[in-house]
Image (cartoon, rainbow, N blue to C red):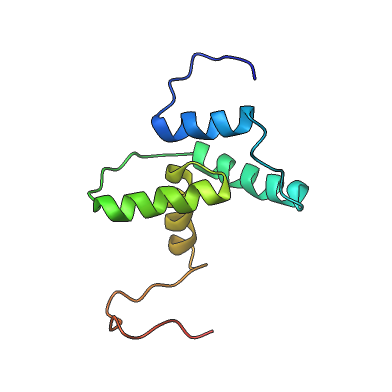
Length: 104
């Protein structure tokens, strides 16, 4: 892997190490996954504003974990969720009782 001037955090270093050791495998549906992720990246790059939010450590850990499972930065995942919600592609009812779940 070619060295760069990017500073990696601990999680990113672990991912790079696993990649260098050949522990990561390409998705069977790589072309369509790549196209989808490129679209996410493009939408993320077109940022207009930065925001600061406070979240619990466990929520941030879980978001980072889910993003890592998808092979994307956690900021991209959060931005994508906000984008999808603002465009009514996903729904969330803040007043829903905790015991109730989404119906498919």
